[in-house]
Amino acid sequence: MSGDALVFYSPVDDANDWREALSAELPDLDIRVDPDVGDPADIRYALVWLPPKGFFHRFPNLKLVTNLGAGVDALVRRDDLVPVQFSRLSDTGMISMMTSYIVYTVTRYARDMHIFERAKRRGEWEYVHPRPLSSISVGVLGLGELGSPAAAMLAKMGYDVSGWSRSEKSIEGVRSLTGRAGLETILAESEILVSLLPHTLDLDGVLGADELALMPHGAKFINASRAAIVDEAALIAALNSGAIAEATLDVFSVEPLPSDHPYWQLENVFITPHMASVTVPALAARDVAESIRRVRAGKPPLHEIDPARGY
Image 1 (cartoon, rainbow, N blue to C red):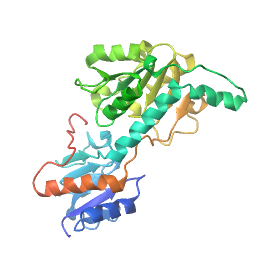
Image 2: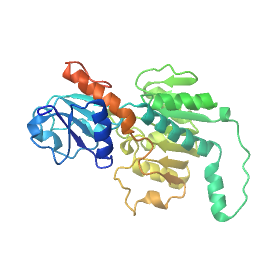
Image 3: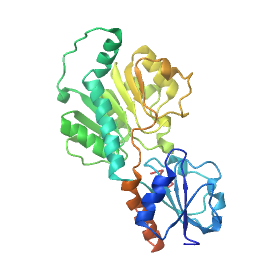
Image 4: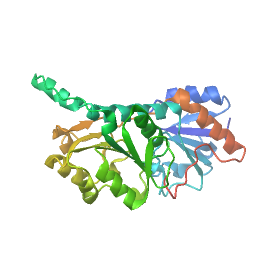
């Protein structure tokens, strides 16, 4: 209806899929796909992923911004937003995808699949005797909406799992650590380290050269959160020296990853194109619609975030 419209923007998501899913939940919602926004004054809601600089300046009556994903760093510390409410997606499909990615990448190292992959390319039969999962220590940095289920699943599989977060968490089978001392402990003890941290100001570059040097020699590192969490130059140096034996990286400071980037030349780096977890419109539209209903009724949206904290 006029005066109560939603604008959709994403460089990677299918607008038609979202239009269909949202229309099934809210038939009265006027859905407009950028740049065809009509009268900008009609826009009350925005469903976006990585909106460009200045994107929101056009919409003076905006009430709710929903992020097409769990990471909201592209929506905080902006100068083009009037005071609005923020929410992020948290659908079961996205959580399942991230959990499956973490289980796969951790298990790929735990079961030495990276060694067998290289042996296959050489045409050699190389046997490595399997180790019990309980003997493999896995550290999960970030125990939020995505990190907690992943850590819990790894623990259920039998891994020795520890997690680090801002506040202490209670997750069956997972030791919870906090603070600087907790970070140093989990770095020093983790044979496989997984980052699912949000990108906030206090976590920018939290894994620098000093922190990476705390990890056991030959440790493995998996980053499915944000590239800015880790000092890229320090990570490349550690990978070249063997201090960190292997890395699986799904996020990068520039995407797509440039063809001349050093990561491409490192045999011990497994690269995935920022696809560890994606949103499934048919599952997530229900939450988006409910947030809009709540805002219409003067209530907070689902999965509301605090821009000051960044999550």
